[in-house]
Image 1: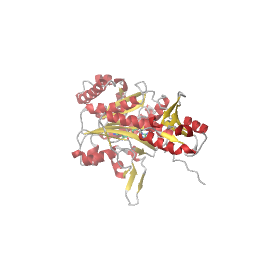
Image 2: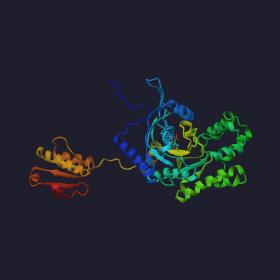
Image 3: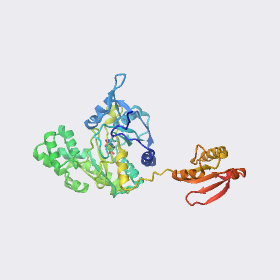
Image 4: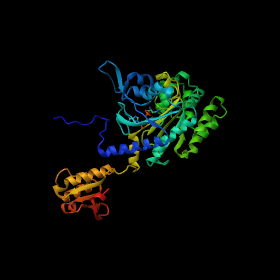
Length: 425
Ligand code: HAM
């Protein structure tokens, strides 16, 4: 007989694993609710073209795609943003702007599996459509940060690295990068910090065709220690003033929300996906040991590219895998030991009907209740009650039942009391 295991990069969620996933998803949903976002979902299978056109090469290389029985080229969704843009685009006229929607889809990417990278993951997507003001950019980052704070992480644990593609584009043009080499330059910059500088310089020369002086100019952009230092250096350059003051307002808004300690400017953040057009960010663990927990930004042209609607949009995706690792490392995962409110213990078979009736009444009142399905020694039932984390046991015995009472034991204190059956609630 063959024995089966899950495919590489795919997870089985045993109850204790599922409990942790639910803990994370609960914080995501609760934070979204606090910010007034509505939940939606879309299909897990989409037309292949939705991604080949819009997501950028990195994700396209990782697609789970095939031809369906109707001859359509299809792919499992590797990200939610194209589906989101398609759905909003289809109804945008009827929706109140700005649109605030969120979703928790399972996504599929054929990645090289490693720490923090699997072939499926759950990703919280939070997006806003129909708002150009930078205060929406700040709000979207605040949503992401607040969910992490709700899970117990602080500014000692995490940092959001922020940039603006419009600013970077102008800095690169000023550095001498030709406009048609911007995409290749972004791709090389995206590797900063993950590959050594010499390898990135090679990429800039070979893939973007930059000369040695331009390569030096490009590296100089990333030497500034802070946004203020960069802004001071480029203050005299008129073409940059709009971008600099926009980002300045963005940082001010986050300071108003008490989140300044969580945010740092980083000119090297470009994001791997092709559709971003404005402020972009990634959230990392402070120690820099793990991959990004979250990434997002503004993508003002994507809706027009996948629908008849032309509206600005922005948002982020936060995955459960890296976040779960960080929570584990920081000791912030809740206990996964099972619990149940009541365990009903029957002394003889004669009390089983009464146990069922009592269980039904307590469940209707909202309690969790279990009992043994077949006659079992009382001692064994108590052992089972312990192992299953019962808060209380109710012992139903023939003598007590005749008097309409049962013995309720508090499993933490060990305290016992004789309680009339109709008073157990
Ligand atoms: P992304 O940067 O590709 O963005 O993914 C966002 C987050 O999802 C990552 O930071 C990471 O935590 C998690 N993630 C991605 N791939 C994997 C994987 N193979 N295994 C485990 N976790 C993974 C997007 O997908 C954008 N569509 C997000 C977005 C929404 N932008 C605007 N709205």
